[in-house]
Length: 160
Image 1: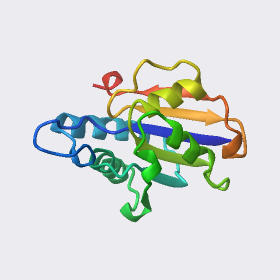
Image 2 (image 1 turned 135 degrees about the vertical axis):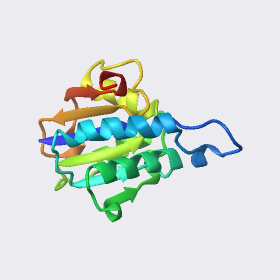
Image 3 (image 1 turned 135 degrees about the horizontal axis):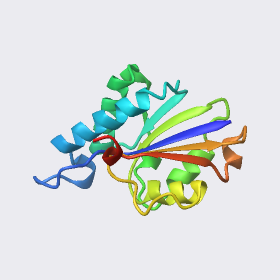
Image 4 (image 1 turned 90 degrees about the vertical axis):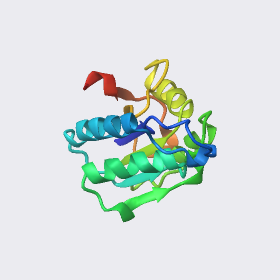
């Protein structure tokens, strides 16, 4: 079994003169990230690896999750392939994960996350919201062979 947990970055700020990669998360995004991180914590998964896009909003979201999940910040790996908006490089990255990893947590961006959630999980949603989580369970032993998954969505609106 392989388990992939996709997390969309928390709501980011469009204020200020930031490049896309440097946009920080907003106060509402911080609240929502803590909310969904605590929801995920209650599921008690033991992650084998945690990856994040290098964009500031994804990285900051990942740091909140690492804090809530009581994981060492050094375990957070930044991966350029996750700074993806259509899903191609994200999909390639996931399908090339080392097979000894069973449960992987990934922080990224839309439309890549929505596209892959719908591709692997059947139609899940029109839009994975900011700070939203999609849990995909694959009944395979190799990441390169993932095709369809049992899917669960944990979106902030469900827990406010």
